[in-house]
Length: 70
Image 1 (cartoon, rainbow, N blue to C red):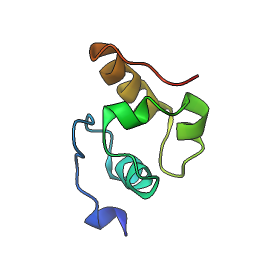
Image 2 (tube, rainbow, N blue to C red):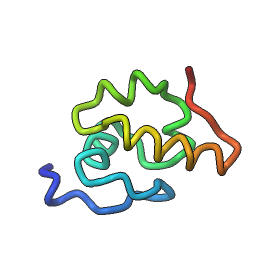
Image 3 (spheres, helix red, strand yellow):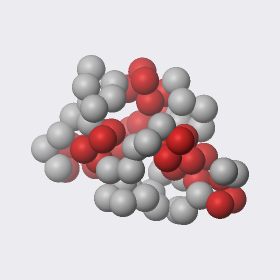
Image 4 (cartoon, one colour):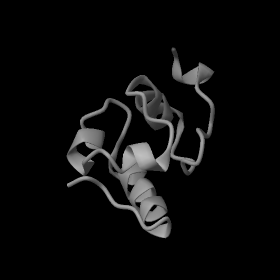
């Protein structure tokens, strides 16, 4: 799947950009609860997920009372 075919937003995830969304989809992640099951370093290791996307995801997790696994 190219990033062009990736939706701009997935489930309850905040908008983090198509490359990051594509990486999460490929990893089977489509919700904040699933993001919470991973560490920052696991997410950053995914091609397309950078520090900015992780910061946005962290803020969204905190707003839901969740946090990264690490």
